[in-house]
Length: 99
Image (tube, rainbow, N blue to C red):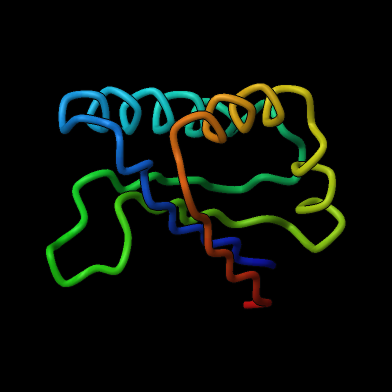
């Protein structure tokens, strides 16, 4: 199994309302990929991170193996969500590891 964790920061120019809407759209789109992308076992997007966090929104997902993670990266349903994400975030940090 492989864990894939992403932490994003929204663009500074977005208002609080725009960030909230973007977070909901990201959460809805990404969590809908479970059952669509083969090898994706679970995916959760946390939108209400504590003030102690170093980011605005987080994805925590689990895949069967590294091959499944690579498949997810290029899957058309994921690419569609990713294209939107790129319009609202300024930075992205990723951690992938075996469990």
